[in-house]
Image: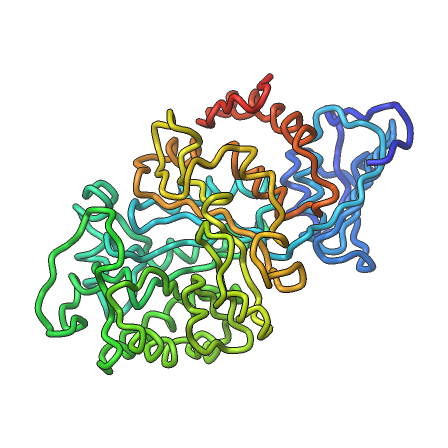
Length: 449
């Protein structure tokens, strides 16, 4: 921000003027619309789509965006600055195009209403993608026509870790979530995890096991024991049916196929499976995303690799980047919201260590992996796995205040970030979250107001 004058502008009692194409965006300010409103929303196609410029004087505010999305991000900044805005000019644009949070519905289900409420909290920090982990060993959370037992059996009572997370989204509920997110400029990225993490599939349809024999439901948190069978044509009929349904329901450009922790899949079978499956999203008009293990296979040119491990290097990911594949950076020791804050955290895991707010903030994605530089990175994601979650309050406790830290890593260029500045700005959210009933971690790293 560069100062224009010392006088501030008060939002109380102000009205908003906006062209018809920005009326819905203006509504997020919660102020009346008027032709001569003191807060003006403007489009300027000379700006980048997500960029905005905010000019504040003692008598007016002009918010100009390169698109409706850019204006929307400027609205979020106004909401953070209010109710009294300091005079000045803010010119802002994101470092990365893909800024994401992931919510695991498979190990504990969250309803459409709960997901939409989560979106409303995410967009305040300019998150523009919501990755939904819809399937895993413990549950299947999306209705698929023609495969009713996926949700009847593996989305029903007793599913989820400890049997404590039953439920699934109907087609209409999923479409409603996608539309709600899109109205807030958030793209839903659906994940169908395969060829591992499929015990829930095989409980529902034993014909997809190697020998056709039934398998038992699993409600523990173990990984790596289940696999689709690369040599069976039934496998690919199932995969194609599911991915087509999900693609048809999801207007966004991405389909995530998982691909991680396939410890019981022989390497040659893993590569054979991916050779058949990786092209399917492209045939459906989508870009395929997979966890970074997919880099062991031959990747389509537009495939995206999502790095998630805490290790400091990965040769396969570096090779994929050298070949031109983009990378989403999600190192567990920096971005995993399900890690404990410290040894006293009542929720979360610690296999990647403790992840404090500062640890989530104080790193550079472009320096994280050898061979994966700025030009290769599509963006940054903060995953939240739900093994220890049982409620929305649990989601919020692990998400806040770390999600704002990861969001700023993804939005603000490295040279523009400063921990002391961030922690001071973050502290202002304490009273806001408290007043809104948001359960957040009172990190001792932050001087909460």
